[in-house]
Image (cartoon, rainbow, N blue to C red):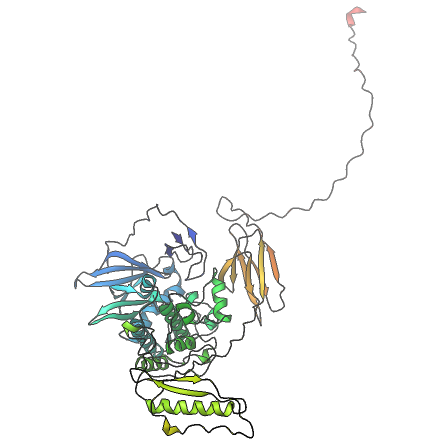
Amino acid sequence: MRICPQCGTRFEEAIQFCPHDGAPTYEVQTQQEPPEDPLLGRVIDGRYRIEKQIGEGGMGVVYMATHTVLQKKLALKVLRGDGSKDAEVVQRFMQEAQAATSIGHQNIIDISDFGRLPDGAVYFVMEYLEGTSLSDLISTGGSVPMQTAVHLIRQIASALEGAHARGIVHRDLKPDNIFIIRQGGDPNFVKVLDFGVAKVGGAASKLTKTGMVFGTPHYMSPEQAAGHSVDQRTDVYALGVIMYEMFTGKVPFDADTFMGILSKHMFEAPPRPTDIKGAALGPLEGMILRSLEKNSDHRYQTMGELIADLDTVAAGGAIAMGGRPGVAPPGNLADALEPAASYAEPAPSTSGGGGRLALVALAILALLIVGGGVGTAVFVFTADDDGQVSAQADDPPPPTTASQPADPPPPADTVTQPVNVQPTEAVPPPVAPVAPVPTVTIGSEPQGAEVLLDGVMVGNTPVDLPRPATGTQTVALRLRGYEESTVQISPQTGDSLSLTLERTPAPTSSGRRRQPLPQPIVAPIAQPPPLPRTTPTRPRTSEVVDPWAQ
């Protein structure tokens, strides 16, 4: 098990970087039992009894609770104790409750209450959902069946359309935040969760200011990854990633580092879903690629536009994709939605012979015009047992000369049977290769320091960062036991930078760090001249005179 030291989220799989905040995770011993949760079994505000923990995320812990009077199951989300002391985190937590409640859409989870625990931690109460997340559905099956996927996508888009109408952008849309339950006669009813990083109404608060990067890297739009301002088209991009994953079982961009994933979102073209899945998706592929356009002006501008195209192709109609590179030509989705014949080529039809007859006549006329000076192709029409007519090319006659004019083509009324003509598939124009992004290698002495780019954790030294095209970016290095060091990178920065970290002064007994004392300046003292060496003499013995001896 690995744990994020910043938000405390636990991961059973070997995730090197936390998808919530980009911090490097660390390994813990799984045999150690976690400390007992003090909230389990308690009654909150005299009416919510905490039964068990059912989820954990970047901002809080989710419990299953029972209303003591109504005996109704509810979900209770509690903000972590440390986060409750941060006014900005508390405001974002409250914003999640207010945003979800203000939308009032059937496909968005309903929040019914809000309060504080005795220790100051904030919480809100929402409806309890019994079902599975979209991420679990994808992980178990690899990809979602076509009919189910189209039904789910339409509900997700409808929920986000309701949020956008209220001026709310989700900004963290991903399969983990999409829950599938049974409601009424629908076994695949969608509930969109977690508006914790939502941007509300374009407010110019520090919660939504430009330059802050929020969200999960695999589902971030290019403008979101770059820290630019976002709008409803960011959710369109995230839904495009989700559609891609639903039909292929994989996300379009993946890398070993947080910054590597963001760079691909900003600069690389996504692989075509057909190449990943190995089967045609028809016009749905065009819808996915349009949603994943790097330029937000080339995406669907609203969820309503996406829903309209989705309804059209689900009914068997064709949609115009604007002829952009990498977008599949329009097709018919009706056959793809048939469970027994998914992705199968449609059977030839015997109706519509007049239209196909006109196509054949035009094709023959074109061949005669193009090949008049070289040779003429002769087509023989034959009918099979089912009455279907096919065209076969016979050996061409010898080339005509000026003295021997060629026979004129047979009149159109001599052709009495329809002909099967398969339309040729449009070949998309080649996609221009993406130029490599210049990088700056950030190193440190000692190595292994955490690297933060404009406050966002991107890896440990040595690490390659994209060189900014304009302006400057602040790079900070942190390492336990050393002072934090910062440096600015700009378009003129060289290929590599290396910083030497200074050790942090050791703390004193009072808990404060001991500051080095200034050394006094002492003037040198003149040494006295050496004394001359003398030969030691034996001391004289005093004489005692006896006065009575005289």
